[in-house]
Image (cartoon, rainbow, N blue to C red; front, side, top):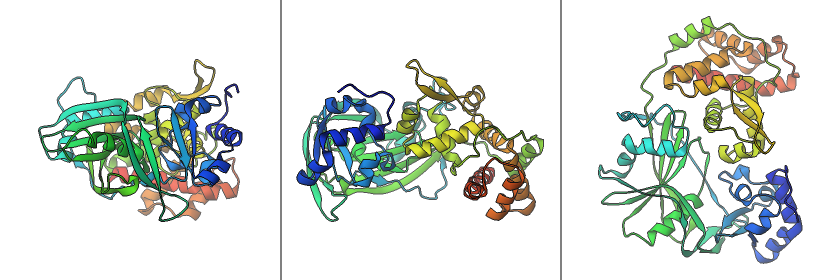
Length: 428
């Protein structure tokens, strides 16, 4: 079978499920083993078998409560596996960290996971996590998992566990740090991840548990909106995938330049709203997610599938947030060397994302306030002392002659309110 081109990951998996009768095999055997070669016959396995968020799983997986796990270098297991853990962001104030006096470490460009890890190490974040100043950066990259067995929760039959055997599966560790007392394995994300694919910590944990006698500290490091979130976990049972427990959550920031409400009001007064662009009014409630998307695209343009994979979101939400960035003139469309449509930062967005914290956020606030609805609602918020209620926002949107119907106006008013909330939180 020739590999299909231009089809979505969801459609590709529909083809594979139909061709190999995967649901029938899972029903009779409890799981289905599939090779990279079989996946590659339809679409590249690299794109087809990595779902950092459960919402990214194709419809056929979600409908049947299935997931996929690597078991060797060239084989995967599909079954009713509970593979993800919700990431809970506590309402804590980030601790300021000192910016290292290093000319070769650009803290305005921490948009790759590698750059964020280097900053975390050189600014003392990792040392604080491990409780030691004597830290060595010792491990990173791809390696073999070795052989081990473990149990995982059945996502269909509550209280049931499934046994899985691993034989030299590929493991990737973003960073490993050793102190005299412990060894820390770190999974890094440069977006505000909503879930953790437990495998990304469990497989390295099992690998290094067989190699060192030191206690192992599994850590998820999230760098988003100039804040480092550190989630320290433990596995209470080394043989049980779902025994993961959060021990502590810490947050750190180097954003030492405050943005005051007075400065934002002065900016609002200076902005002359532009005409509504020929882009559908946005439906993207989290402005933090918009900044994450801009961060993902900072280094290079990506196709829609690549954005979804990197962004760790479901395809529908990816569409919403791409459109929101286009609405703000921050993303433009192009074509890559393979003739596929890709999305890249506009020239202005490229400059904005290279700025320091305060300048960057003020520039992004300005882009929002240039849109008539947001400019007017911000003014109402300042005059009344609070963000207007939904009915008032809808009235502003209706009077702005947007090319959307009333039902859509009601739904998308939440985006206006959410972006106003983001601006006012930044100004606090």
